Length: 474
Image (tube, rainbow, N blue to C red; front, side, top):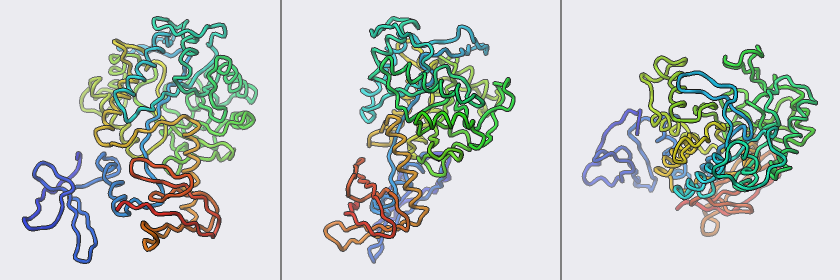
């Protein structure tokens, strides 16, 4: 428990209460049973939605109260994107200057090391045994004549061949061919950027899903600086209605169904967690947002990240937050804690990093994998269930399922538990609208298990009851 007011208590001798939360000899939570059989739970500390212990306890209390039967579900996910593969990045140095030419480019060695680090993370964190990185690529610098051999000691010129060698070990996302900002591009330019990048990726076997597009810097979706020559001031959120209509037209014509958004842009945030947001100008396309991180896009080493972070958030920074400058270890610990909050909430959305963050700064370590290792370590301290990881096709399908679920809640779906039927009872669901709703604690067609929780996606016909077998936590 942190950042909470706590009332330290003890259970009186002879009291039948059971301690549920303790701190040393102090009792901070109790469970009791009344004479009529009702169970009660009391906690003697404060909570709010931003605290880790709230994420841990609130869902557990809901499961306890409902015996695991409720509309919805919660699972834990960690998905990570690396933007700008094959491209060149700006490079920030500890003294604060930025190198634009030649900048930073991933080497064959960095690619092999990233694959090795990914394997090591799975081995060190068995709950994340299926973890795989998503690489958002810009294909303009793909070498079409490259072989397909890995180069553990290779430089940038060996990146294409090494990527071909390792292509099955990562997942791939279309990030446009040349990485232009798409806020005001024409239909022809936008169409070519999307389609030509598909062609370049497919030519070397990357095969990114056509249904997903990550625009450069989330451009084209209504968030931009009105001054096109100003790259440093915060952008203005004009809302999704301010999106580039030619981007939407080109994306639709190329069968793109989902565009990456950014959770730090209010207009990109869906009304409900894990849902997608239908674009108001083109409803056939939905926005699924990513989590940004404070591991800067143009840093490659702990020294660079520390200098940049403190130049923003230190006591003398642009946006002072901390009373003192932080060390690299403190930055990683804090940022991993932020990510743990996302993971604990059940958010499926991906976290975004950039190519500079995969540089092997020594002994195989990278800024990216330092962060991932810290997040996984924090997760394992609290959870025993798997840390899930999806490709973008599965992620967007899940977001669509959650969107349909919340539509049912809005329509007035109703579920009734009848414990008198059979051994465990039944759950009967009705809704005035057709659609799909997720039910935890129910066994039916398409059900899946996560830990001890069973969830069923139940398809409903309007005003028609559907019944499934209940699976309560007894």
